[in-house]
Length: 539
Ligand code: OOB
Image 1 (cartoon, protein in one colour):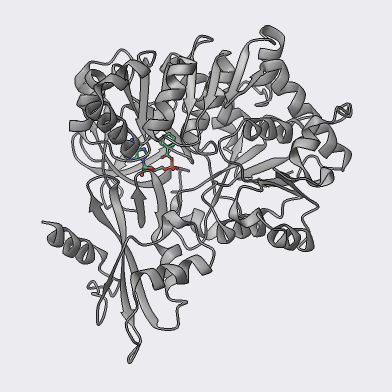
Image 2 (tube, rainbow, N blue to C red; image 1 turned 90 degrees about the vertical axis):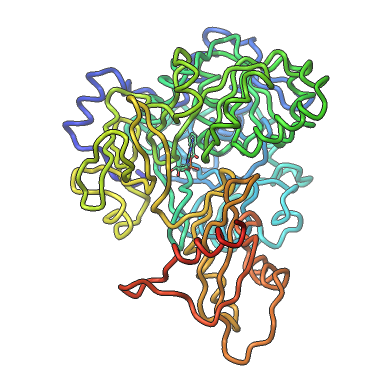
């Protein structure tokens, strides 16, 4: 069994009685479609088309092979795949035999992958030859030497290590194999993080499945939905809000795109008659620009009925332009991999959709907005968001010290967001966590600061958000150099970080050098002052 922080008995009972937790594993999503519509089109990936029966067959093949190697309950996997059909086939295969995956982002590099491997000690790693880390055998061999039993690669020639080969084999699944119990960990989500090491979020079948079923209702997903997955497949937003899993739950069709670039996506939307798409704000800006620059390309996206936008602050002025220019409805989403997801509703008046980030999925989501003393603030006043509910986790994986800070005595998770209530809806107005939100990609300041000071010439480092017209925020590193250190160019400093193996989106966009970092009255680095100095620069 994989350890996690369970919900207290009384709440668990309440969630069951209310019908939120139905004690069905996530694999039921596929099983239900296999029974109802086996031949319906489930997934389109480039020229490849998969029915629900096909998805089920391939995932069972892999599940059987892994079970044959002795993998099962209590085991874990690290998966790093791009936006390809295999992502979901592997996901269901692992869940089918009770192996809990961490889905690393494709942009993650050696540092992130090694950290996930360190934390969960996976028995299998499934990745792609397309990724820099797996282009030669060095990293895979190191994983094997470190105790990972199997490294399976997409695009591998050697049959025994080829994911495609393991999918093709048709052995029967052992009778005793099955998913973990529905109230246990199904898989791990990744936290955007604010600490030195990335934290893992255990998600149970019950809690995740409820968030999916409820999202399907709220977003109007049906078997006629044709959903474009252009954001990184493992992210909570395109996975479950309502996400690919929501579309599978409703028996619709998922269409994969390699990136949210308008040039790529518009052609796919036209060809596949896509009706629904989740995007982060910078991608929406690119889509708007594409349509403005070339009005004829609006014809390519006429099938699009609904665009979900979330992951980072979405400017009201941009939101207002979506329906007219892109010819679809807008739905705002404010969610987090830790649980709580808010949506504007399809029946909401335009003003609510344009100016708020909606309200929680569930009547059982408890949301508190607190002042600095922990007291609730009146409506309309900004405060720190704290929440608990039927699909909000109760603790990061093996992180007792961080959990003691992130949760209060009543089990409310403090997300680090500053929000206010406006007529029953939430508006995200700021952040207290030490994170940079770079167009939806989250960067934990402490993680990068720790890496920067590993440079022999850097004695102090502070990473802060700098306002950016396109991404919303970019990152700026303020550095103090050792006495007598020579000049360091931004490319050389980024090279230092790349050599440590960190993902590229975490590299500072800018660098500033100071003789010392400003401190607050209590002696902490005064990041507000650093941020203000950047705002003054751009003003
Ligand atoms: C989503 O999940 P994460 O875990 O990558 O990031 C969560 C954080 C939130 O705590 C908040 O700081 C920010 O991202 N955020 C937003 C936002 N949606 C997320 N900030 C402002 N406006 C929004 N609409 O990002 C995520 C998960 C599920 C659905 C949608 C987004």
